[in-house]
Image 1 (cartoon, rainbow, N blue to C red):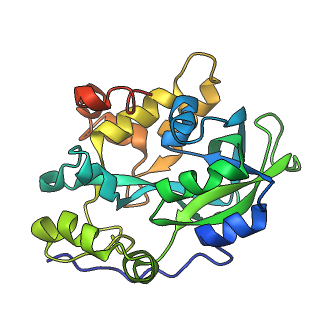
Image 2 (image 1 turned 60 degrees about the vertical axis):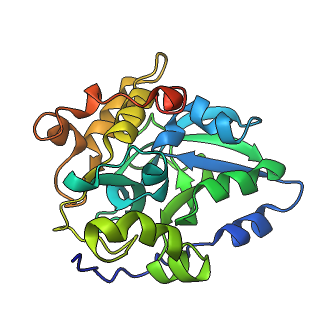
Image 3 (image 1 turned 90 degrees about the vertical axis):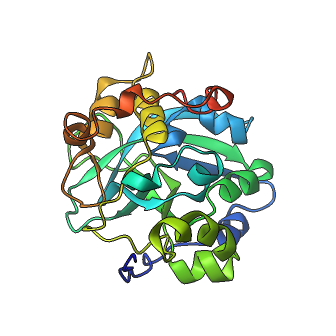
Length: 253
């Protein structure tokens, strides 16, 4: 039986409906991608008009493979027997100097609901985007909307997702939590998704800083092991784990 860890909500986080209201019916939202949305192709699969892709950096946050994604079970790429079911989230860091490289892109208000629906288990925060060039004293260039953790109560009950998470998680773990996987949970990245994100960060034309950031500034659920360390040790199989043929276009960087 999985023992869930109580996780507080992120201060100032917004729900999807609050993001839509803030952007307005005719506005444009700047979105921050740090996992699969590092891939321009992945972003445009949901938002065909996504434009102005650029790289930047967020500070005071950490990128963590720290929660299960229902979609991995629905698509048959989760590995619950080894707890390789984790997706990425950004969470506040105690170290204000920490951070990671992100992609930013613009989405028209008309396509924003589809993107937010894709990110069903998250809340959202508006954070500064800093330039890749320049030191710690560089001012932000802009702001963007980034996924962050919600709470189990919000996702499972208020948003009505309990039944599908129970169907995915209960047979393997005996209980259901999205955001209660602690540092000692043994949660590991979903291999197909992880490979996809690594490939997206290594696309031709993407600065090496972005690829290095994904490997060195992404943490496993223990909040200690970097993705690079994991791939060089227990996760050596990840980059050889191909998506099913029907998902090749979706999970191939």
